[in-house]
Length: 308
Image 1 (cartoon, rainbow, N blue to C red):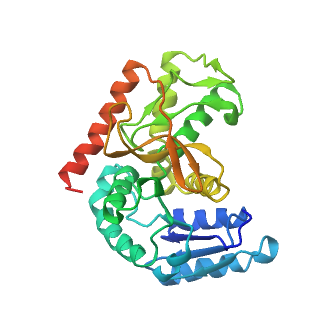
Image 2: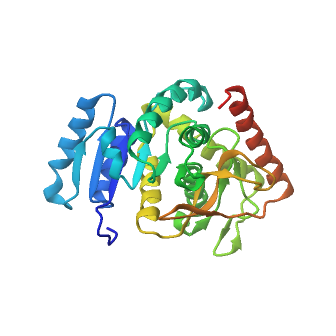
Image 3: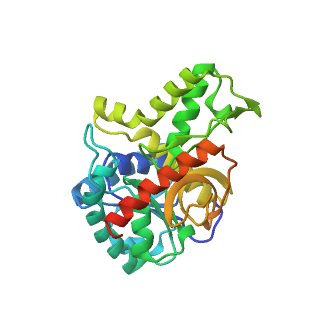
């Protein structure tokens, strides 16, 4: 828990599978003093808060309650996980129109009570929802963070490590671009302790396809993904609350990043108490840069079509 005279408060909007699992993860790891759950189904938020409160004697002394948007007033971090659920076989982009309407309502309410917190966006399609949130709130871009390709990169590292029988924490590899079908792997920069990863092209292709399609596979088998994304959101919160300056592949507003501007995409960023302190420019190969531009063009076209 960061040493601070002010109590740290995290608000989670959306008490579905991702929101409730994120709340429990943050609580288990004692990340904040106060945890607030907000959901359109207030009984669900109340039930989750009661359930977690009943376990407090086994862990820390965080205060947990089901609240209203007024509780956003003192929030350091507001995590938005609310939105329509992704259906089996449905792409993240197909969720867009349904989720924009939901976010319109959420951001209007948040803005009534909070002007200087940090918004973490987790609802899909996360890059477009992050862009919409920026335009709606008119907050400084560094205080709006999409979960981006942080989880995709974790999956990528896990699969590389699994193939090589090496701890994934020792694998340094990035997935960047859209959190979705146009994302790309940066094999040119992937390494283990600075050593180039020796994997043939066929296996590389299999690893990337498994990474890109991981969510679809999980959704087809159990209906939703929530454990790993909850851990990813916990990681972002920790970097903020502890002022870590951690490098995380989150979705950030880009301005002339390899020639790409006015779009949110997942790239390595330094995350600290201010939000996104800076965006790190990677040295991509020519082919990787082409794919990155293609990913950006896809998102920008959607933004244009919807007049966001």
